[in-house]
Image (cartoon, rainbow, N blue to C red; front, side, top):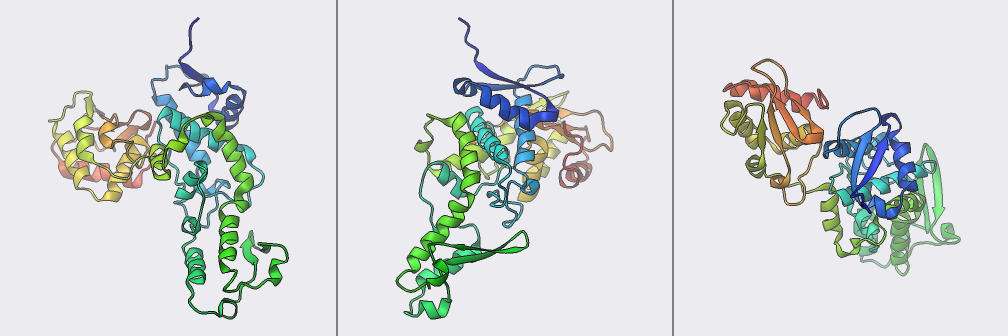
Length: 354
């Protein structure tokens, strides 16, 4: 009997989200936990890792976009937290759970900005006031708890009823029966904060969380996630923000006639190591579609610099699926490399990417 070492996923680009979820649902959970190998229908070529990486990139771009309707925008573009108003897209949240689990099993980093609270929820750990993402709300609740006087009711004028704006309308919720008529006092303020925090982090997103967890457990059931701390799980999913470009240089391969002593290559490393952190992050995203390093640092990442023709005014491009930077041979002209590479990574995100 021949054992298939891979879980084969053959899908159409035009129906990426729908077909991925449908095929995962139909698959035997044991097969899902094999190494993933992706193919796009109508496209030739064996997946040596690049197609699978592209698959995760495409799904991530669609599912983790803060403007997709799946996530609230109240915390800006740099945080993914469930949209409490989205009660129509259970499949979207379920697929996010599937994607999360597949990325863990296949050691692929995701460009997702989950707060630590989500990793704590995944691990079944209790949540508290420190997990509230709204800084102003967190400070207000902490001030209520820390207030030294015995006149909480008169000073804070709160009841066990919440009021907030949603989609242009004022909404109210009682945190306990008849909460609108129960004042918050010195004696019950801890209960108020506990109920408030639970509503924000648990009850208000329960529908979305249940769908996410269904997808995640489809892949991760019987796994040993509980061996990790929340911070460790986060590193496995999104990588480390510490970028050691000297380690990346030591591990880089060169193609097309370049080597580590080529003038343009030496200028490239001088430019990137002297660049400000935000430029370094953009370069990494431009060349590898990631803003963080894998576990173990950039020295563990395969990276290739390939010659992209002779000297020209062309901008560098990249094959992000293979962590390959396509760099024209600008020779020893450092200013030219600095200007053209700088334009490519700062102004032309997505230009020429394949």
